[in-house]
Every structure is written in C-alpha cells, then in structure tokens.
View 1 (cartoon, rainbow, N blue to C red):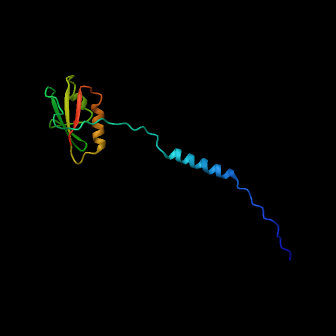
View 2: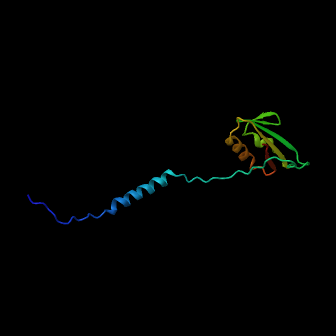
View 3: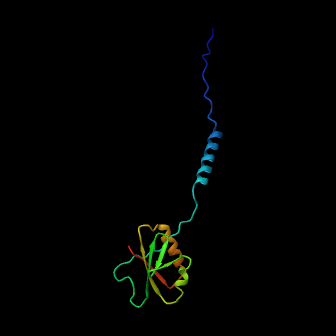
Length: 123
C-alpha cells in the first residue's frame, strides 16, 4: 500500500463569497436604518418674571388629549380660531400626568404658525 507523501497545496481563499456577504450586510443595514429628519420643538419654561405685564395671558390645561382653554373644553383643530386677535399674547400651558409628549408636540405645532402667541410650558 503506497501512501502519498507529497506536499499539500493550500487552496486559495475565494474572495467572491466574501464580497457577496459584505454587499448583503451593507444592503441590510441601509434598508433597516431610518432616514427620517428629526426636528426640534422650541420650549419656553415658566420661571419668575417670564411674562410681560402688558400682554394678555391665557391658560391652557392639557389633560391627556383633552384641552381646556381658560376652563372651557376645546378641540385641537379649533384652537387657532380661539387666537384670532393679532395682539401679542402669552399662553401658559399646564400638563397633567395623562398628557404624553405627543399631545404636547401636537399642541405646540398647532400654535407655531401663530406669530403673536408666546407659549410657556409650566413645570
């Protein structure tokens, strides 16, 4: 019985499959990541002496999705009609424990186009 005692040749590693795996990983991470643009919401926190005395002050209390403007129940869609006066106004916003950050963002986005409104979030 004869044994082969010759030198063993090493096989070269094929780079084709490695390149395929790299492109598949690249494709996976590109499709699974989000490309959404994050925007910021400007908040003014209430403090001592934060309002001017000559501006009328209105009070909004948020209790979850429910909005009370000066004690009267109001829908979010009709909030812009309540601030139709062009006079500079300060709006104090009070939040309850049931109010989520999305409710606050929706309210601030509704008030943002009104340039004569200065919203102050009470802590």
